[in-house]
Length: 221
Ligand code: SF4
Ligand code: SF4
Image 1: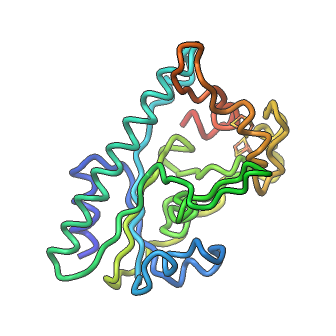
Image 2: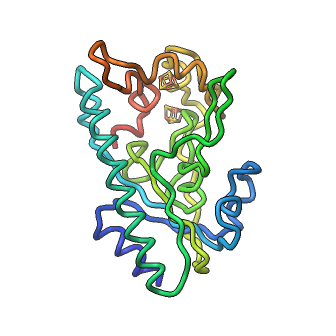
């Protein structure tokens, strides 16, 4: 069954797919655990799609923004199709949107949370490790991945957890952040939001800073 699930996601365009049983989510904050979303959850399927390193060479962030938005749509399509497949096998499945609307919002600190941290889910499913820039790093695609997920009551065997790829001595991302928003463990969203997503003069939306992703040696592999 695991192979069928993974092959389906790959055939639909996913680049990475991992499985994590519910016991992998012990560290999830209260209210943001898979069981808080679906009380019968037994496993999580994490899927990821990568974007090309060439986007970092553009002199405008418009292509990066456009690609991210397209990838989010693709991941949602894969999650929904996987949901139908799991249901056809007699189980329940809940798709998690790749660009989750924040159901939690701390307006004072401008800190938002989706219903499930997709990068932490990817880590729990063995796809990679979270780096000091708070992004997931994968052996093959580095930190150039976005994620979706499906929660199911199907019991699936977890993939092996990935090793940590961030080295002790590297602090490039921390030193490069124009807002000093990173401390190596977490991100100060309030500081980051002041520069990372802005409106263009014409009223469009653009990801105006991705420096912590771009400067990481794992953005180039
Ligand atoms: S996106 Fe920019 S401002 Fe936000 S943490 Fe990364 S480098 Fe800092
Ligand atoms: S820049 Fe260095 S410290 Fe930061 S995430 Fe990448 S490898 Fe880790």
